[in-house]
Image (cartoon, rainbow, N blue to C red; front, side, top):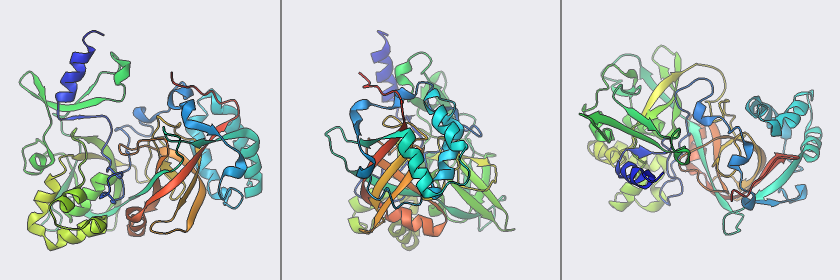
Amino acid sequence: MRYLPLLLAAMLSLAGCQTVPEKADTTSPVASIPSARPAPEPAVPVPPTATPPANPTASVIMDWLKPARWNDLTGWKSDDLTAAWPVFLQSCRTLQRQSAWQEACTAGGKLANPDSDTLRAFFQQRFKVYQMQQPDGGVEGLITGYYEPLLHGSRELTPKYRYPLYAPPDDLLVVDLSSLYPELKNLRLRGRLDGNKVIPYFTRSEIESGKAPVQGKEIAWVDDPVELFFLQVQGSGRIQMEDGSMIRVGYADQNGYPYKSIGKWLVDHGEMTLDKASMEGIKDWARKNPDRLPELLAANQSYVFFRELPNQNGGPLGALGVPLTPERSIAVDPRALPLGAPVWLATTLPNSTDPLDRLVLAQDTGGAIRGNVRADYFWGFGDEAGKQAGAMKQKGRMWLLLPNGYPLTTGK
């Protein structure tokens, strides 16, 4: 291990190092763009990087959890738990592999058409509830939103459809050192070979200008470069073809550069005010300034490559490996709470003080979703979901529900 500091220094000096798939930094005051879905690595149906750890305590730090009472959960007695119940059972498809969850998931699977009162009794009898806390003891955090966009495209390059979605190029290297250095398990390097040296991969502008060997890797072409950019931010979406057919695409890989907010770039360059730096504001600026669009998009050097997904019903696959459910699935920091777990979310509707208190399931992750009291709320598919997601930047509180006897650790 004496070489580890040198190795880390070398890796961190490589501009193309990235620990997670692309995700908008929604903690930025100018990043009110709906944040990206933390899409899984290219494996179907359950991505290996998304599988919950064999030791369920590895993701939970006892210091972050404050034992609470069910009466502490704002709105607990009024939520329609039947809407969350199928989502919980979906989580159990993965969670039941872990001994800590087997009893609760097995018992839940035996309930036949339970009503909300039955489900409240189920959780109160078989689970303990913990309030999530910040390192300083605070209980409020940031709640943002994301969605699955709809684009219009073609399998062929045409004058109308001329902006390609690429599958990962053959020269993109992904270096995973976790087998040698377990402490680097969340670090993967992206790069390419130049002779016998690994150098950073091509930037967004270099890829779009034809410097990267991506010819032949086109999945489809779409009609709007701005919508394509936001598809990369979200990490997954649907493309409607001219013949009416639909394909689904999801994250496959990334060029290794961290996400940079183009909303921040517009504000910093005096192109718009902070209150206008939303997804709709950026789209409006792009329509009025088509000649400057390449300059704007190049400000974010990160570039996402896609894979075509099975065209199944339901939402996109989250990091847990199950389809996301609109308004009942969230993305979280898996270092703070285990993927798949039920979470009580107490926040407000976008740009509103109207309460949004409900049971949700932690079925996704994301590069910008970092912290104990931090969640990205999945709004669903299409333009209306996008409007809600783009407007959501609320304060909120979170309570974690864990089965009785779930082993906790201080992580020390």
